[in-house]
Image (tube, rainbow, N blue to C red; front, side, top):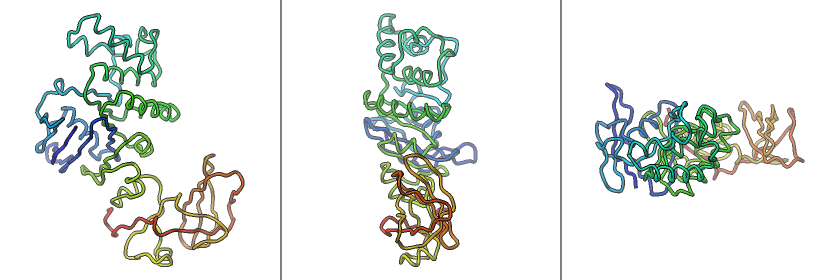
Length: 331
């Protein structure tokens, strides 16, 4: 569906993207994930036509669109700020692109009302100025405006970042459902690991203008290809040399294990003391002193077994869950 081949983008002497290669399948929810300044938004803007690469090609369905103007790419865009017209009604915001294309009034009305219903905007809300809506409702308007033109692809740049935490989770679920209902190929940019893991069919993890790994959420999380990905995706423990040696691991390398892979109980590989805990309801996160190292572990909250600060616990580690990297590879 979408192919980026050997994309290089420069701003003056600064190389923002280095040899980017991405293949997005039709109907896929594909996420660009990474920290600020890593190149994910630059890649999105290269796909949409706001940025032209110095080398490489952008293709959609085997057609080269690298030099095609933005308005001719048939790509819907939802910006981080939504870029809505605050004094215009919701109806006019959604209809804006259709009016530019000079569609007739009856067609515009039918399309606006149909898309509004699909994104759960009422007839009453269509009459309101955008400035009168909540953040979540404005986000729906931005999505409706992008979808009403029936694009082959929709690109979203951090569309949930301006919302509060509770609303973000709610709209994240709605966004995924909408994408599946429409069956539209979606490219999504975020720095939020949880958001990426929850929404995506596949993820490309960016770092310093390069892609470190592309894979499913499970592949990215449980089989991180590089030390950077391993550290960026979720919380993790770096085992010290004493622990690695006792487990029979290669101490010349960096050995990592996810928090939920550690077993706590009355027996195990290491003896430790609980320093503190964080209570999350569904699970409890423990900080445990093991020798000179603080090891973090997550336990499902069963309402019965609860360790207090000062308690002695044993830690069990299955080496098949340890991810191993050359030292210095993630620097």
